[in-house]
Length: 323
Picture 1 (tube, rainbow, N blue to C red):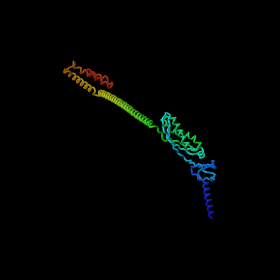
Picture 2 (cartoon, rainbow, N blue to C red):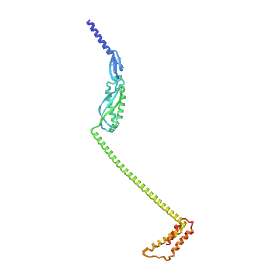
Picture 3 (cartoon, helix red, strand yellow):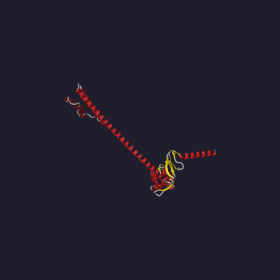
Picture 4 (cartoon, rainbow, N blue to C red):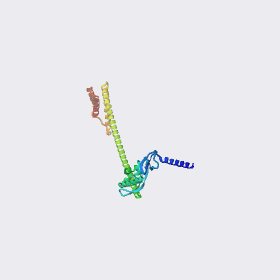
């Protein structure tokens, strides 16, 4: 009985091993390469897979996820013979598990070495200043060069990123001095531009102020001229109205007597003023001239009844001139 029990245990263990060897569960985003009798047989995808025990074996297991690969720093020589230490990182993904298994003995080392050699070639074609400006160009060139060769290894290179560009200390000091000089230059230019703009603003302000003052003086002169013209016109209109009223008064009853009286008053007043000149007494040669002048003035008024109102003014001027 003990022998039967031992045999059953052995058979159970063999059956368990057989089941374990037969059933394989592949995780998501993984691919397993199966060899049958030492030759590639199939690639197992995610999920439950059955293989023939002791004939088939899982030779390689690959992850299909995106893998970051740190490329070791290396010293590159630029076009202007300057040493530059470059550090980068590469992202790749296995797209063909069979090629990744048999295309290269070590595809990771192959990708790393290819990235370094391509980087040295690209940096050698560029000057030092351009390497800092053309990072995108460097990354794109390296990805294109590696991806073309990595296709035979079942690997897809997704992108390459430069982590750091480190020139020698002497170059760093020189670059810092250059940057400082450029900043000081820009500061001086900005200050001079500010002073220039200030002078322009002041000149524009003075010009606008002068124009405003001249416009004000011009308007004031126009206003004064218009005021003087209005005053002269008002005086002329008042004089004309006075003459018209005088003429109308002469034509009215008793107007002639009033004129006689007015002329006599003016004559006497003018004579009195002449008599006071130089403290000398002046006596008219013919005292009858007064009555003659008055008579002449009245005769003119009588002979011109239809004359314009200016006639009275003419008579009065004649009398005054003769006096």
